[in-house]
Amino acid sequence: MPRMAKCPRCLSRKGKRYCPALRTSICPLCCAEERLKTIACPSDCEHLAGERYQHNRRKERALSQGKAFVDQQNELFVDPTAREFTFKLQADIFFFSSSFGAVSDTTLAETLDSLRSLSSRIFVPGRSPHPIFGFLAERLGDAKRYPTEKGLGPQEKASAVGKLAAHVRELARGASSAEPSFRHHEVISSFFGALDFESDLDYSPDDARNPVVPHPHEPEPGRRSPGGLILP
Image (tube, rainbow, N blue to C red):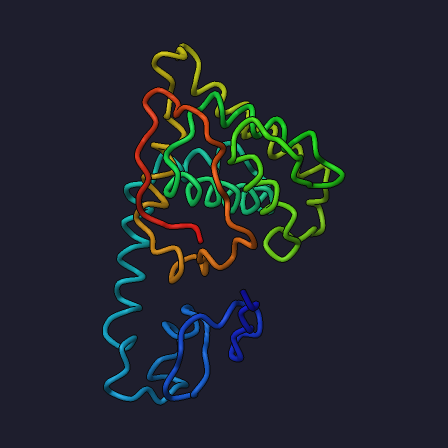
C-alpha cells in the first residue's frame, strides 16, 4: 500500500480527506479548522456540515465520560512528555482491542513489561505470547509516531511503560484466570470510545504498516467481541 502524502496545509499530518476547493487531500484537522476561513469551500462539500461542532462535542463527551482516564494520566505522569507518550500508547491499545477484543489486565501488564525490557531497540520477535505485543512493538518502533524528544529518550520511555504496567497490574489485583479483570480496558474505552480516531486523533488503520493477525489460540475467558475500529 502506498504511503499517504502529507497534508499541504500543515506539512505534518497525513492528507486523508479530499478537498474539492484545493483539489488535493488535506488532513481532517486542517479541514475542520480552516473551512470557510482560509479555504473557499463549495456549498456541496461533504465535509462542510458541522464537522467542527461534532469534533468539539466528541471532545467534551470524552473528557466527561473519560474523567477517570484523564485523572489517571495526570496522577501517574506528571511530566507532560511522558503523559503524551503514554496517551498515544493507550490509544494504540484501544485501537487493537476494538478490532480483536479487550485484553485482560494481567495479559496487558505482562505485555507492557516485555515492551519495557526493549528499551534500547524495539523489535518484533518471531513468537510473542499475545498478538498485541507484536502490534505495540511495531507501533513503538515507528519514529514518526513516537519520536525521541528531549527528556524522553529510550530509558524515559521504558520507565513510563513500566509505570503503566505496574498500574495495570494493580488493577488486576484479586482477579483470577476464570474471571480476569478488564478494568484498564473499561477506563480507556470511556475516553477513546467517545472519539473519532481519524478526525480527532489523526489516526487511521492505514497507519499500521502491516496487518496484525492473532495467533490461533483459545480466547481468554470473558474476552470481548471485536467491533469498532478495523485493522487492515
